[in-house]
Length: 442
Image (cartoon, rainbow, N blue to C red):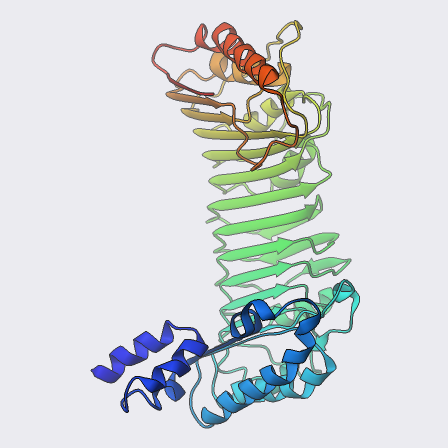
């Protein structure tokens, strides 16, 4: 019982602290050598000293430390091995030996983060990860940062791999496709900043995949067969996306670089037909002219829509109405505005009306409200076209930015507050249903 408790304690501590427990008593002296989780993180091992020009002098010390600890674990099972250090030629042979160690120790979780030093890091030679040395029968979680992938000719895949996390990995679309096609147990996949410049089509079904995150990989198209997918995150250009036969998708988080609201609907609505919650992040080009409502594409199951909208000038926010129109069952709406200028105000232009009912919309939250014409038109549209609206929150503070990019003098700030309040009274308070709870935060 005591050893079980000690093992739990050791598994929660950084390796440096684990080793220090050997001075507690004779019962603890060699116990650290059976800790199943080994983490060698240079920033933790060397602290504040590990920075700038001083980093190079720590390489040999890091290597000696890792080798000494792994020698103590020879012949024992190690569940987890994490290596984080700047890549250099001095490390190559040792990195290969550490991969061999994971195979002999039946390691389940392996993480290598070996970023090259200096400003040229992303274009510098990267460590070629030796997949042929891994024990494919034991590995269940693989995390790679700043390595190159070159699959061996007879690559058989990882039948027990459940989680794959790749960031800044140099890999071709074909090699990634081949790797994923041989990982039938995969449940969690994240591929970020892995420049592939082409199509990523995984034709082999991934029947267990629940989470998929693809970001900034410069793809031209993407296709997955993942019938149980629950969460989908995509950030990049508006490319053709095909998620075959997904019916259990709950959450989607999307950023489309350079895309308009119309592009978003055209790209996503036929892909995310089963999504119940969608976060869409965009830089809004001004002006965006409202397009025709006769749009057959639908987010047919969407209940919660969150829009994160950045813009330089006032935006034609009625272009957002078709987005809402493509989600007929929407119940909760959040729109978070952020502007690169200090504030806007209504300048006397007439407020346009655009009639389209949102029969199920109950809860609306607007932040970054600066009383611009576009914002007033949008909020007025919501108030007039959401018959069952229960709660409307309008907040002046910008939730997407920690600091205001423009320093506003105190008198101007007071004027802005007064203008916002006047606009709210004129266009919102007098129009909103008495059954709706109105929250104004200024």
